[in-house]
Amino acid sequence: MPLLVEPALPAGSLGAQEQPDLPVRPGLALRPWRVDDATAVRAAFGCPDIQRWHVLRLDDDDQARAWTAQWEGRWRDETAVSWAIVGDDDRPVGQVGLRGVLLAEASAHVSYWLLPAARGRGIATAVLLAMTRWGFTQAGLHRLALEHSTANTASCRVATRAGFTVEGVARGSVRHADGWHDMHLHSRLRADGPI
Image 1 (cartoon, rainbow, N blue to C red):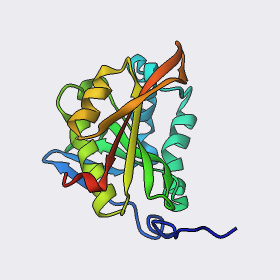
Image 2 (cartoon, one colour):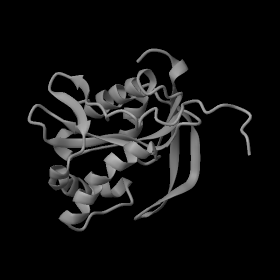
Image 3 (cartoon, rainbow, N blue to C red):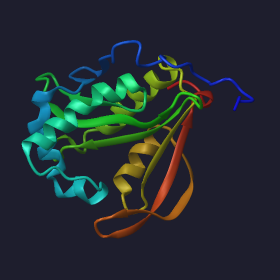
Image 4 (tube, rainbow, N blue to C red):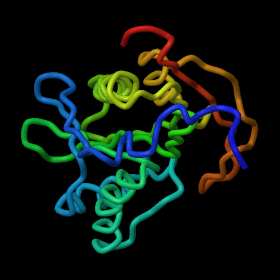
């Protein structure tokens, strides 16, 4: 069935190129995941704070390696992208990425997490801004959505500081280990202005 509108971004907009490294600020960058990052990923998914807001767990090193290895294929398929947040030592301290990429709509959903030692230093906001800038200026996206539990006040602060507007609350829309959560919906549009 033909569409009434052309896709906002053509196939190959992401997957035809290599996933880029993104500078954030001195001593902080985003790079594609590598299989040897599995130890940091397993530590992250074993963190009670990260488990509180996510529904995935990793039980062994093979699962952690599979998690890191998946991203190259998802980039090529143009369905998702994830970066390791790294310092000068090139060791991951967190993750930022886009899920549910829809080229036809030029949209995606944001995700991020930080290991405990990296929290409280503005890293999450800085990397979210860097990825958002790339998404709008290099990838050509129109809209980025961000959703978090209403109980996750730290994530709400990050979203707000990065210029993501609160759109509302989706009641009881995500089930975490402790039950159903109401979710804050935030968004940022390329048309909202410079980052």
